[in-house]
Image (cartoon, rainbow, N blue to C red; front, side, top):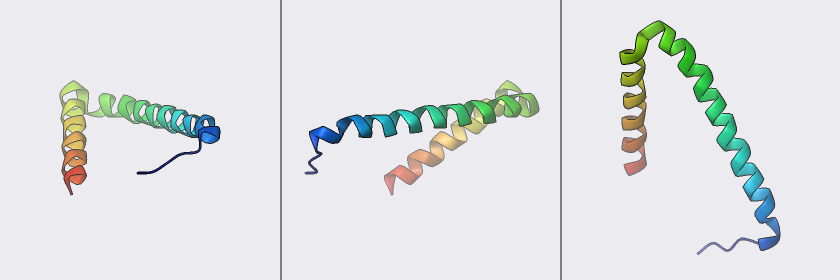
Length: 60
């Protein structure tokens, strides 16, 4: 089991939030042009493909 120092929980939370919102902003920035190029179906298929890839890599 990994023990975390309770005094550092604030900094870990900050790192999590920065990563969460940065990745969210990048996803939005990529999705808008993708939607313009491929339309709704193409964007949905791309998202499904990425999710399936992540699931396959997660099982490894």
